[in-house]
Image 1 (cartoon, rainbow, N blue to C red):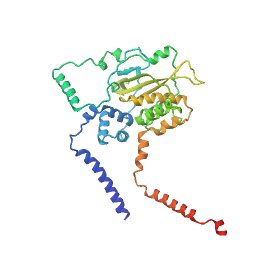
Image 2 (cartoon, one colour):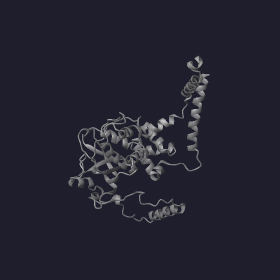
Image 3 (cartoon, rainbow, N blue to C red):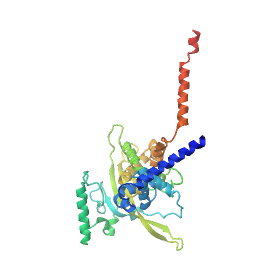
Image 4 (cartoon, rainbow, N blue to C red):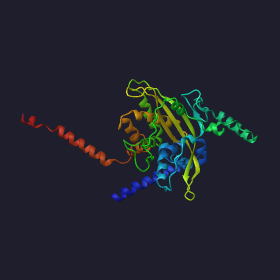
Length: 372
């Protein structure tokens, strides 16, 4: 009987898998190609790459399609796939000042070094759902312009190199001696959290890596809870810079022993500023936090930068550090949640039996009552 039950369970699982796959493959609409997902669902693809910890738009799009739009499940597929890939080597560290800026805003300064580049963003679009007619009209206009071979309007992302690699507000603050210098040499080699899980007491590189790979919603929620004080008043938050651009990827050539550029990755980078006002803090300066993540995901990078500041002001082994390292990974939290749907017959039966024994014990008359 045991063999028959196990075989039946296995067949049921296979049938469920087939049902998912067949529903996706036999849908009535046109098949969703990977280039469509990459071109038209870019924010979702970027989130999958960031939370999956792998820069590969095609793989992320495949995972997103297979998971039917579930970002956490997509990231799970990407991480599982990444674990099967061989490691041929490591890339060389690059200076983030080499970022090829596609978007750059400086909320804290009216005239920062270098221009503000609004770039591609949803920040200034009305929160109104486009009608099908509006979509068709825009598409027709673009097709007509392409047919006439007209040159598109000037794109700020294709501006001159001095514009696309502007100076930093942080450098201005340092020149004015207004920023705490948090650069140090006590964490020279970045922690590899893909091989060694980060636990409380981890170096800053491990904490930043954990946040870069964290589930976006979890990190934003933790950040929001952190800046919301007990009096329900928001702590003052200022953003120094928000950047989205391309960073070069370089490796050492095995034959000529020189650095060679093999491509680039898009990243979102944020520097957050916080006023130092604690009794033991230097009130003449600002603290600066840092966030950087794959793709175009400004919400996560902003939360990350502000939590980076909060961690420096918290005690070692604080609840905030534990929360960041132990609860923000979407695969960990959702994995535990998902396992609750698996059979727990034996566990629940033992709970029922304990309740039954306790009830019988409570109903048994006490020795004193019998004696009286």
